Image 1 (cartoon, helix red, strand yellow):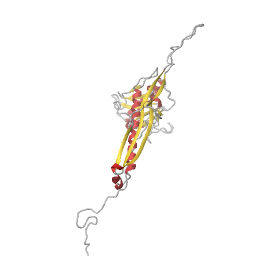
Image 2 (cartoon, rainbow, N blue to C red; image 1 turned 90 degrees about the vertical axis):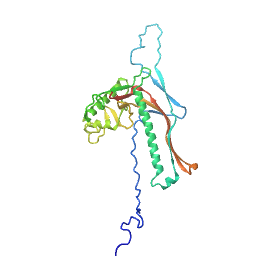
Image 3 (cartoon, helix red, strand yellow; image 1 turned 60 degrees about the vertical axis):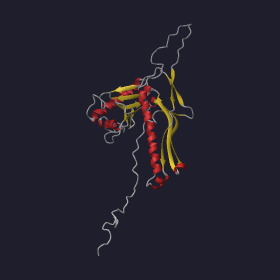
Image 4 (cartoon, rainbow, N blue to C red; image 1 turned 120 degrees about the vertical axis):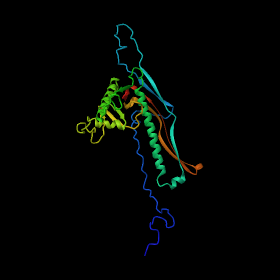
Length: 309
């Protein structure tokens, strides 16, 4: 006996409409952009006021000026000390807000609130990271106060994109390594103490050239520094290498090298996220995320821009 109904069970007998529905199986989350700059500068928390003063002590030992031979029976000459100040003021609070309709939240097949909290938090974290990166770059271009060294720009036309750049990843990697060594030496020539943490940030493409330089190849020789097997590089010449998509997009800029004192941050509020219901929008949820800080150059001698022009 022939089957009397539709020959395709998922199609209606008296219409062409499908009777099947897709099944929601989950949310594919976006990859989070890593933040690397924000926790690597001098940061001070405020409980009030609109900013903070950093007192900068000047160098006294660069020359023999002011050091004189004493003549018996004469009064000593006095000289002024060297100090100055840098004031970092708070910017106006920055925020992002989203309204989540109650009906749409209730009928969605995923956690709408969690997704939005995740997105706004990541967004603002990267806003702060880019602010800090810009301040480090500004520091490398600034003049130091009261006898302290200026920021430094290392120009190496053999770097990727430069006029004398090689054509292979190996050549690019060697040029970057050469420039990182030069950046650290420039800080030390400026009397910067590099016995602490020194960092250099590169974008992913330029970071990838380091293991391909073939100078960083054996973890046994380099104490676990990395190599071709992992593609990871921890240090070059005593400088910690970090990879970031937040390196400023300044023309010719390949990387930034710095120590903690290159820039300063005064912070009133960390990133805070709050949710409240709005009766006037039928109990929709208002999600707000915000922060308040100020960031500026602090010690220019502690920052170096590495450029190909």
